[in-house]
Length: 78
Image (tube, rainbow, N blue to C red; front, side, top):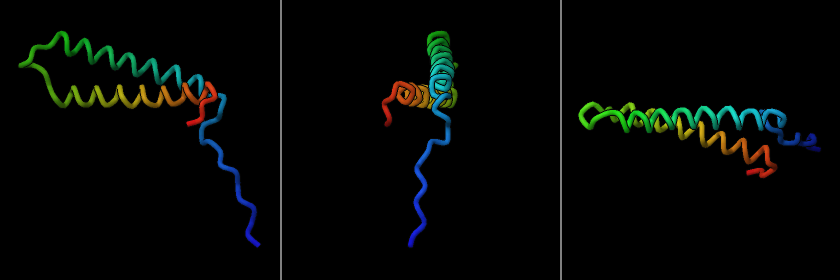
């Protein structure tokens, strides 16, 4: 006979979902704001594609995971 299977559980406790959502969304919004400020204040000659891609990528990751934890804390299990 096969041993009974373990239930799948989250590596992050459910009680931390709201906190993680707020923190990650706040970080994502701050990085997004810094991206917009950088774009508005720099000229076309002084812009750096690498800085734009890194800033946009970091903001995207934090906003994505923040949205995920916001949905999880609201009971929408995706």
